Structure formats: C-alpha cells, structure tokens
Length: 181
Image (cartoon, rainbow, N blue to C red; front, side):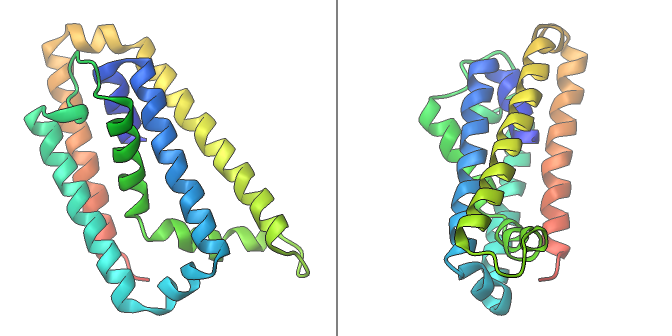
C-alpha cells in the first residue's frame, strides 16, 4: 500500500495503476507457488525462509532510504513516476520478497475450503483474494491521486509524507526482520 501511495503521489494515478498491477502480479505468483506446494517447502525450510526474509528486509530498507533521498519512482514529488515496466517490476519485487504471502495462501485460505477441495477451488479463492487486493490498491491510488496537488504544492506536507513513507518502509522491514516462520 505504501508503495502504491508514494508512486501515485509522485507520478499520478496512471503510475499508481502500474504499481498496483505489479503488487497484484506478485500476489498471483505467490498463489501459484502455494498451489505448487513450494510454500510448504518454504514453511519447513528455515534457511530458505530466512534468506527470503532478509532479502525482503534489505529491499524495504533500501526503499526507505530511496524515499528520503527522493530518488527513483519512490520520490514523493511531481515526476513522471518512471516507466510502467519499472513500476511493475518494483511492485513485484516488493511483494515477492515477502515470505509471508505464500504462507498466507497455504495456512489461511484453505481454512475457507471444504476438506475435499482441490486446486481449482484454491485457485478460485486465490483469484478472489487477488481481485480484492487489486481493487483495494486501486482505491488507494485513486485517493492519493485526488489529493496529489495539495500534497505536492505544500513543501511541509511533502516533507512529512516522505518521512512517513520512509518510516513505514523501515518499520515494515524491522517487523519482517523480527518475524518467525
């Protein structure tokens, strides 16, 4: 969500849509991984989980630093937002490096399926989750786009927004670093 908001504020609604697409594509990738059973391997392999977890922590801390430095597509200032491919790639990377998302598909979603459900039912439930994620992120992008001019026209608001986004990324990184499988 923070990534979508910062991209939308920096590059407008269109950039926010591309960021939303990237974050949602990562959700689809995680669902495919879960359905392939790799999430179960990730859950049982502490080394693999830790490796992915700390890669995610490093990426979140880098994103916090990039926001504070006002560089790249994470800059909260008037900009073109970056190329669609770059925005999508960053959205995918941000979410793909979160080892908890595939575990969510393995541990949480099956609770809403009957005992004899198969991959088709899991895929349907996962597709519903993915669609809701996309729509929620799109809503955040629309809200951020509607207030974009007010934020960008005030240096004081802009400074606090950058600090809030950087703090959010750093806090997410710290929380991820402290998570256990």
